[in-house]
Image (cartoon, rainbow, N blue to C red; front, side, top):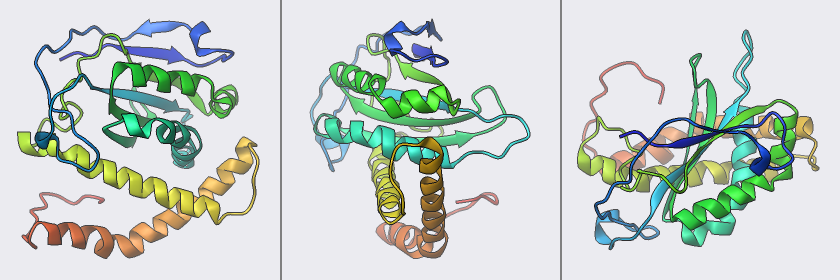
Length: 251
């Protein structure tokens, strides 16, 4: 299934509505009904409603022969996305973050995904358009473009439509509950770490230093506490059954 996305090039920002729009692909609506989850509730135990997955992908500059700027992910998540998420949280059934970086056509991107109505997605897009901080990091070359699912032509109607197709259907359908909780955990760790950091203001370089410090604190929490707080308790929930690991991998 091809999904229509809007590629918004952000070289100059006075208003996103004045930017050039590029239709990246075509799609058609899925006509069948779908389950709509409630907060903290499995999707199969809810009724149906017209909600879709909407993805807001921030492409982050990654010049050749440079290290990945993972700190920018934290800044975007906490200082740009979190206020929008908080504002519309009552109207979002599921949400999550996705981080990736590879030397390919996509490169380094940070994506916020929300399972909500078309109207809510449009409101969030407008909020991002009004973000002075987002405009600033674009103008300073940290973010190069934004990829957004077209709110009027989106085929991601099912709760499992952004899950890995290699998983079982049941895992695909119920996994969004898990990754939303993990995303909320990560965002909360950022908030705690930034609150503990010195400094304030909206100077991007100073903000990046604070978020770099926050990233170091979170990495320490992950490496020292993740085994018990996360992996052990996840294993316990599944009855302490052994987990089959097929290859060496970074968890």
